[in-house]
Amino acid sequence: MAPHRFAVGQDVEFMPSAVETNIPRGTYTITRALPGDDLDRTYRARSSKDGLVGVFRVGQLRNSVAG
Image 1: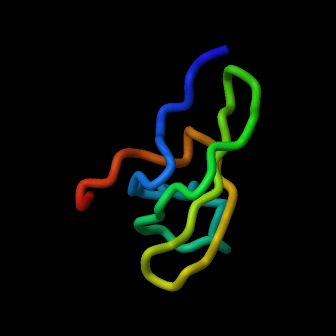
Image 2: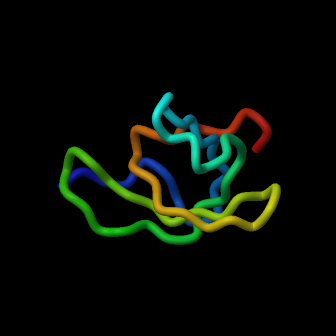
C-alpha cells in the first residue's frame, strides 16, 4: 500500500474541478489521513479561511505555496 502524500498538520491547496463548485478553493490544513485504496488516498481537512471541514481525494490537493 502506498504511503499518504500529506501529513496531519500540513497545509495544502484544494484545487476543485469545474464541477466541484460547492467547496471553496483555498488553503486547508490536513486534520486526518483516511484509509483508502492505493490509487485514491483521502484526507479530512479544515479550511484556514472559514473553518469548513471536508474530505478530499489526493488528486484534489497540492502542496501549499503559503505553508
